[in-house]
Image (cartoon, rainbow, N blue to C red; front, side, top):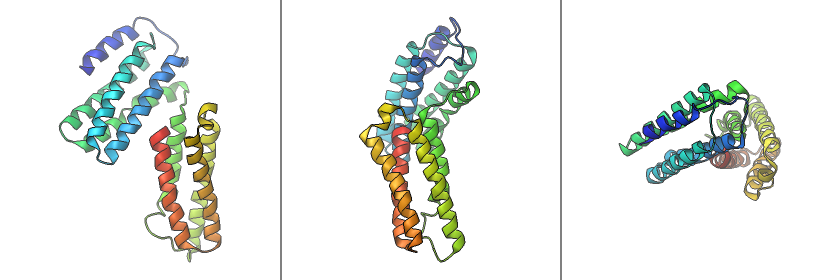
Length: 233
């Protein structure tokens, strides 16, 4: 079914050509809708909610088809990226129908790659890119969450302070890149401000040599980062 739709979509797209650099509102809608449903489905798969993941995948496909109708003609490299993304989506759906949640997750996670490569090639950035970069930076801090940090070691204290500082920079960058409507969204503000506040408290916990307090903050950070990634990544 999806393959037949893809063939039709490519015929429509090939009917004319627009500059890849012209990121129209319709294209932004296509990309934003795709990433929105994809991250929700990934969240369900990550927590083994396969039934909800299947429902969200169907919503993704329905939204994708509708949004494709609105983008008009475009150039060949984007056509190939769209085709590659849809192949990953179809493989994810197929794997989930067969009960292979791990493969479904991997295919859906990779579905964004061809679209991201196209956007990188033409210099187009989405807000989800910033959240993805934040998550990568945050991983250097999260490695200290596994067990209560031993603040008796200077190198551990310094490593956590450095990682917390880098994470704070990444959070502030995303706050700066957020559109005005998102920046004022109460749920977004709670996550951003909460994460920044927790990061500031980490410096206090280290200054007080309070490992337990620091560990609780590290656990709290994980919640903030996961929710940011789930909602906006």
